[in-house]
Structures are given as C-alpha cells and as structure tokens.
Length: 117
Image (cartoon, rainbow, N blue to C red; front, side):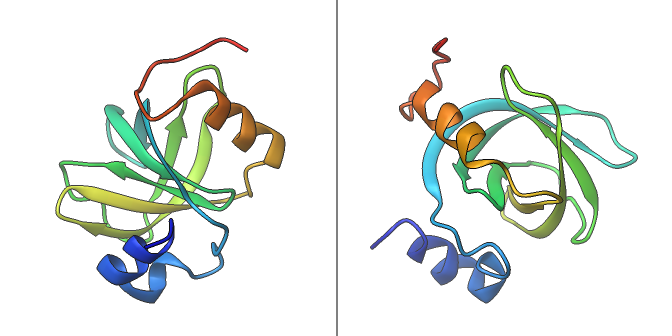
C-alpha cells in the first residue's frame, strides 16, 4: 500500500480531489483553529503540498475554514474536506511551497520531535 492508498480506501475520492500529491505520513504536534472556534492542540498525521490530515476529536463541518500552525511556521489557511472518527482532512487555500514541505519533513521523522535545521 502506498502513501495515498490508505486515504482513498478509507475516505474515498475526496482525499484526492485537487490534492493528488503524495502524502507523507508524519507525526507533528500542531495547533488547529476552526473558523469561529477555539484553537486546539492536534497532531498532523500526513502532509502534502495540497493538504493534511490531523486529529480532531470534535467534529469540524465540511467546508469550514481553519488555520493550521506547524512549529516554526505561520498559520496556513485550509478548508475542511472531510471529518471521520476523530480525524479531519483539509485542503490548503494555497499550495504549500515544496521548500516549506521538505523543511517540515526534514524536521520530523515521524516521532513528533522538532529539530532545528
């Protein structure tokens, strides 16, 4: 199974709409703030240039705008594409730059430990 198969199998075609870049499974502590709501701590479980999947115990409605803040980065605006069983899938309003994406992946090896470059 490759990096995108699990999203497609579990969440259907919505996981690939306009965000077909390969997703990297990671484990990054972050903050997520839904529009009109309080920010909360989360863990980003996968990341691509076009979006992310993160833990979200409370349901966030599809289409809701939110902001993701990763360590060492400014908030990234995104829209909720799906929510299921405590996980949320979001599409970034603007694609993440390949350099920012690669830097995030270089700082994390799936263990949630931040490393300065």
